[in-house]
Image (cartoon, rainbow, N blue to C red):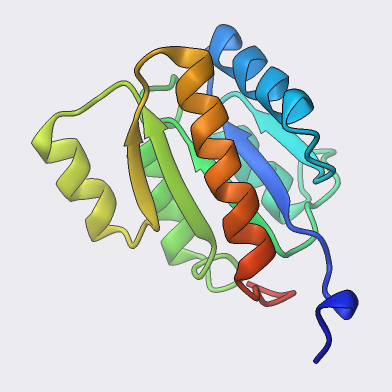
Length: 147
């Protein structure tokens, strides 16, 4: 299959920190990424976006989820539990981008089949590097149009 026939990968940022989200969106703009970017403030909103419920339009696959762990209502690990239980979403590609470098958090996230775990350090620079890496990943790896 020619790569020209493949759909662009969308990104879903799941993070309640407005400063982090603004930094990621600024990095997307500076890197001139043309991918659609969606934002959810917690796991509940992210699931609504992925499922197309609660008045949300579903995000069409393929997509990559960028997930913070520390959020209200439904945190990142709870979101991963729900995501992996849902047959329609269980194979979603998730990268954790969080402030926690605690071994139990890293271990728990990888146990839920994440693709990578990155600790937020200097906000903008970390986001720029992560989004640059994800852009390369999305362009090189063939992702299914259904998850």
